[in-house]
Image 1 (cartoon, helix red, strand yellow):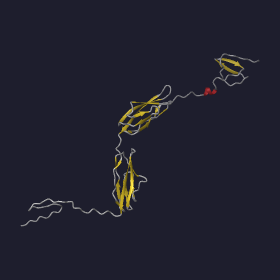
Image 2: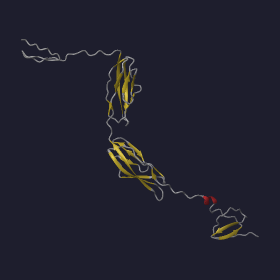
Image 3: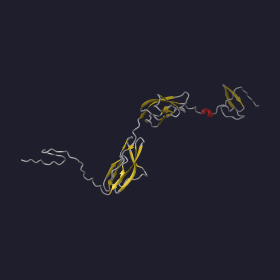
Image 4: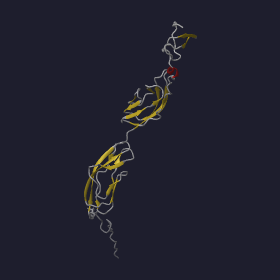
Length: 275
């Protein structure tokens, strides 16, 4: 056969690879056209036919189940989280947050310095960027408490001790949030040899072994992050100090009556009767 050229106003769609001078079958709108020319490769390839369609976004979910408590006049920071759907997300809340707290609609961060005590309930909504958009909601509580009293070490001095005799004195504090933790400030002195500081109770106890005066600084920290320090000293003597001598505190005596018994003070004179 001579060269045969078949022209068609239809677009040739590739059904199988074929080279020039090889016979290829092309189905065009149900009509089979037989030709000796190469088939066009503008149609879909096997890879195109086997590729999977784009997957749909997963279900949108708010993963945050609770929010931490805050304290009046102290910085507050919390974060809402979500999963699934199509990012970016957009957050919203109703009703509004406690006074002076705000919600970042892009990140879900809740920040600010609350000024009012109390517990409030809020419904948070999460919207994704899929089409159509998905929206989920979660109701959470925020509790704002009053600030605890200022933590202060109230002990300003400690009693002296004696070498070889048991010693036990407590350093005390007021305010703050329990439990308290006690420690010695590094580089600010040491306790007398033989004495130790109880980190839970603040008691300084032991049996001192060396006479002299030791200066040091104690530190206390509460569960809420407050702390205070106090410089103190303890004097250890070689022998116990002498007891205070007795002192007469009475400076005057009331008057008496002639012929009548008189009795003042701890000693009572025996009464004598004459016949």
